[in-house]
Length: 545
Image (tube, rainbow, N blue to C red):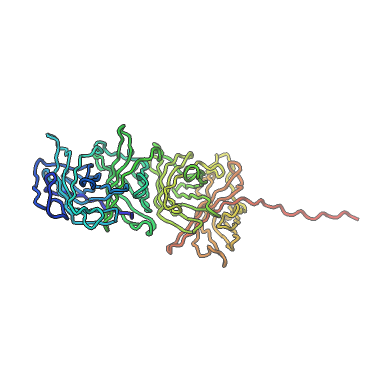
């Protein structure tokens, strides 16, 4: 099933059918002379749940009616489970209540089984409440048959819904924090990751979702959500589109969070809908820190599921620039971008990541990452890995003892001057030798595949005890050099030390570049220092004869 998104506009109109009212027009509900029911003014805003259809075609029916500015109605969207999978059709439009009559206009139906839309339907219902109460408890009505889709029954479709128990818990962003995923094997596969500040990243049928969640009012149980879809056009046909809608938390009998509903539709452009109902993964997101944290440092750890995790290394600079890499084949996959750290906490987020796949030399932009940092202690997170179909991939790293980020003031300053050679076939299948002259601020070298390398080298910032050096204008040249047409790169260098500081025994350079023409380049150099050879001893003087 392809991805369907839509802006959530729900409006409900005026007259309403009596319970079970029929009509002769099969394309719209209640147009065959149903009586208009006018009673006490009803205010139907909130979440509703029940059933639609009859007999063997009866299905669960869940949705949200926006209260609008006057409380009598606004945009609405209902999700109808279809048989055989965990997917949902959608009924959405606009409407309001006049007295106890609720009427929707310009109602749309999306059939997920065959990816078809029907517009111009109507929806009518009778709203009732308990005696003496202003809160509605039930809506009974019908909507038009979605002709021409797999959901068509050639008859008006009745529904019976009750004011949902989900309305009882007011929305609070910290309560929403967690990871949520689709239920079962069949239907669309998706996953959402939401932090305590309402930042959302996720994946749905080949698309990456990024967005924000906000509470709507102090008493509403609905969270407002806005989403953007990105991804390769071949597997994410709606890439670049945006949606708005609502989220509802689900709770079990003990009052613990158990799942989530997300209902959204396209804000602009062609009709698109998301109706997601899933469960929560317990403990998948670490609790946010209550004090300001700092993610800068050199980190090392593991990425991927337990049992098949791989080594991963990361560097984060004071300006938020980050670079993660892991060994793949004869080189390295890399992910780099900019992290935003939450004010007064340790939640991190990035939506501008660029992923380099070493084995295919392919770049993917717009990669989302979210996580949590504790200063000088831990960095955990998740990102969408383009090399594995945008699977949400988890990593956990700790400070890297081999590449210490800072030393005490009593330690010797970092000295990276020297000549280094990449360890093993780690540079795209070839070897690279670089000489750093910290006093001159230069990098020169050559590779086994015919490249000459030049660049600038300087201290990052003014702190002599920070193991971070700026690399600039890293350029590859040579008639046979496969990187000779790539733009000059910039990045960061760090030294590997046997003790806290002094002369580096290894050098790491992480650099990247891109230009207006769309050409990109990446360097991951991990090398060991080549000891300086002493000059040869002069020949011995022969003894006097």
